[in-house]
Length: 106
Image (cartoon, rainbow, N blue to C red; front, side, top):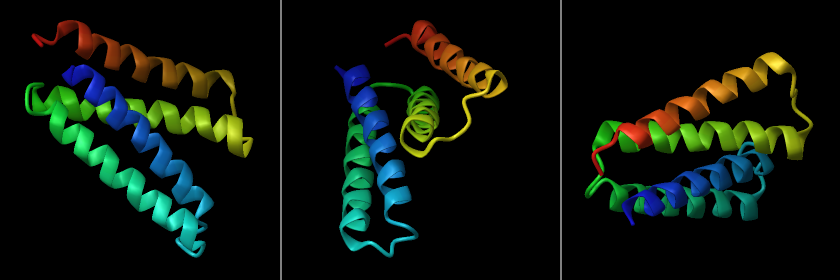
């Protein structure tokens, strides 16, 4: 269950980074509120995951999910670059996250 909490925490990290972009520097208040709510939810689920998972693994996987999700959201929502080099770098992050999951004792 703690890996599920970590996945949810990572997904909320993607939510808050996307809503932060939409907030335009915290000038759009509804998006700002959504950003803060996403941050709080992300940290709550990260904290639950870290009750059992090693801190280093949990933090690396959490940031990895957020980074990959942020790149994918940027491509889909904001027309950011999807060139092969950028996608290859994202694939390396995914490989690292999977490696941490597969080598974790929990």
